[in-house]
Amino acid sequence: MAASSTAVAATLMPLLIRLLRGASDLASVSSTHAKLLKLGTVSTVASSNHLLAAYCRCGSVAHARNLFDGMPERNVVSWTALMSGYAGGGRPRAAVALLRGMARGGVAPNAFTFSTAASACARLADACLGRQVHARAEVAGYARDSVVATALVDMYGKAGRVGDAREVFDGMPAAARNTVSWASMMSAYAQNALGHDAILLFAELWNNGEDMAPNHFMLSSVMNACAGVGRLGIGRCVHGMVFRHGHEENEVIAVALVDMYSKCGCYDYSKKVFDRIKQPSVIPYTSIIVATAKYGLGKRALALFSDMVDQGVQPNSVTLLGVLHACSHSGLVDTGLQLLHSMRSKYGINPCASHYTCAVDMLGRAGRLEEAFKLANEAQIDGDDALMLWSSLLSSCRKHKRLELATMAGEKVSEFTQDVAGALVAMSNTYASAGQSEDAAAVWSNMRRRGIRKDPGCSWIEIKDIPYVFYAGVVSPASEKARELMLLLDEMEGKMREKGYKGRIGGARVLDADEEEEEGEGVMVGVHSELLALGLGLLVIPKGMAIRVMKNLRMCSDCHEAFKLISGIVEREFVVRDLNRFHHFRMGSCSCNDYW
Picture 1 (tube, rainbow, N blue to C red):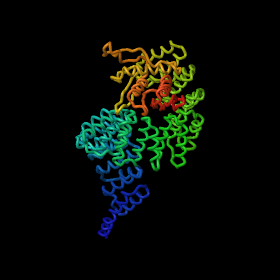
Picture 2: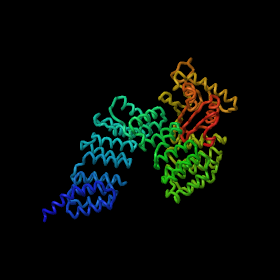
Picture 3: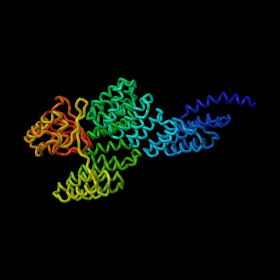
Picture 4: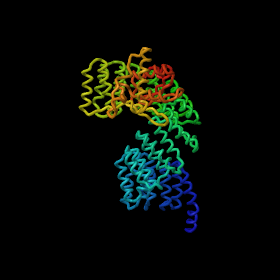
């Protein structure tokens, strides 16, 4: 009889294990677990490990933990399976704690254990905890294993420690670096606003003649880098690689392309990529809605949102933020407020700090400042989110010349100690505009006393895949074209004056420190960086091609007016990406309709 039972168990075991591997719901796993108990085979380590993995796969980590605690014997697979369940189930700290438990239990971790622990630290963006995992991997001799090292690169990247990520990457044997390793390092750069470094690493890979087919993760990482720094030429090359390697149907790639083209000033291309997606999910819809919003195409963004809802796609928090942003930059204030107040009832999404900040910005932009202040106080936001909210309100008060309200917003901003330079400069400018020069000077004096410095404004333009970066007044990046650039801007200024322009884009010439006196080139005092970039574009980019300029700060009203006038004078199209949105200048007008 015992021999018969053993034979039945031997026959059924492989079948039940196959059922476990294919199970994706708790009921199926529990049913198979009961069958294994009847057969009396659940006590073996192998069958228990299969059950552990199945429970974790269907999201029931509690059942997995109960099974794990009752196992008389556990091996590295048991520990790692539960660790993976915790990491995937939103409990990464519990996953890392198991690594310490393994040491106490006398079980040696393997490469997959360390990579799982590093991935858990990546979810936490905790470099300190990640270093502990890294140290254990070094001691165990797994730190240079391809899987472990790649997980460590990803972890350091997500924790903002790009230097540590590169150190791990450089320490990998050349043979151990695979597509995922390279892609992880590129992603670490792109995620930390180091797009140029990501592009350089991508170039290094292909210039070295590595026989390595790029996967969708690598291509999307490079496109994200191109989007961040506005490198359209490289982005187009990567798009060609997408087609050559057969990734055009991949939704991750499609979303990266939508984002890249929109952030490089090519909204029409962005929309074409979106239109080719057969059944877009919430992520592609959100990407194109956010892109449309940044171009100030509010009604078009609302139409896309309506189409999304009609298709049965449930919006997420970012989608609704994109729609609010579209309303803000198009003057659709009442529509935006209606969305804000119906988010919970219609879509089951509670408004967060970002939604309230966008709504306050929307009201302030429209001059409805009392309502904006009321909403700002009702939102009861604190921390960095509060700084963003009150900085936005301060900017609106300055725009509408409401000094008393600007002072109130400025007092809120002054309570913060970090990332306040832009807001304090806006406060100083508000005082200066109202003729209160002493108060303006006092703000600057306070900034110097606190050691607060404002990031310098810069603009860049891409010409034949090479970026030229300009700072205010400095024409030297134009190299041998510097003199022509200054003469051109002087010429444009004269023609603009004929059309009633009151400002001044030219200024006194000042020499760079390393220039010979007779050269007379280098600096045009007071000329903003975007105008210098535009001047170079007019000199070297053939007529008929749009000139695209990127800027790290908000475009000022004087430059905005100058770009409009020059676009009509030279009959060319300009696209400017500033900190907040895009401006498309054509024949003397801008796509924003001067509402920005």
